[in-house]
Amino acid sequence: MEKKVALITGGSRGIGKAIAKKFADNDYNLVINYISDNTNLDELREYLENGNNIETLFIKTDITDFAACEEMAKKAIEKFGRIDVLVNNAGITKDMLLMRMKEEDFSKVIDVNLKGTFNATKTVVPYMMKQRNGKIVSISSVVGVSGNAGQANYAASKAGIIGFTKSLAKELASRNILANCIAPGFIRTDMTDVLSDSVKEHINEQIPLKKMGTAEEVANAVYFLAGDENTYITGQVLNVDGGMIM
Ligand code: NAP
Image (tube, rainbow, N blue to C red; front, side, top):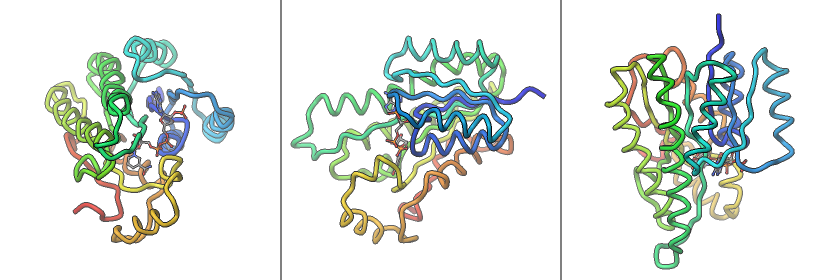
């Protein structure tokens, strides 16, 4: 049987990389999007292809560029003939209290996190519609639900992803395309490594499970929503946060 295909934005590091490994372990061919060259890409390709009997297509694309996203979806179809799963994972932070936040830092975060999610989704959905089948999982954040001082730009982008996803879920249900969000809490990746030890300790105190999560724990939840066994969950936000938001 033809293998299914998952396209993961920002699949080179952190949570995206763990998601790529999860889908590879479950026999999906992969399209991995990233933006900056780094030496770990060869190692990741080696792990994905040699550890598993699958094929990969690595595509360097800035997801803020709509035309480049169209090209990415086209290349994925040329290679694999189908896209079954889209994971909108690529994201950035530029944290600052509102009074000191620069306009360009607000725009940049919205552009990558929210507009990038639109770009990737808008360019992949036509293929899913033709297939009359597809799963879209977008990585939001608990701060998109709760807000967070110093993250007005990031929280707005992540709240936007939730509204976007719920609208998609309603628009695309008739074509058998399911759209959901994962809202991670604090997960150990490059994004949170920049926090000082004292901030990390403070964060852990706020989490009922008293520790940050792992990228693999997020990947398991993504796979739950995007895999074949999910046939009746759409328009939902699943928190993966050690109980932070209840
Ligand atoms: P990360 O380690 O900083 O990785 C970010 C990924 O996004 C990288 O693969 C990066 O590619 C890619 N990327 C950034 N800008 C891009 C662009 N313009 N076009 C294409 N790719 C781009 O982040 P992470 O912690 O794994 O976070 C992944 C997602 O989870 C993000 O959406 C983030 O907001 C969300 N999240 C994270 C946490 C957390 O605690 N870590 C919590 C809640 C939500 P390169 O490697 O090429 O730079």
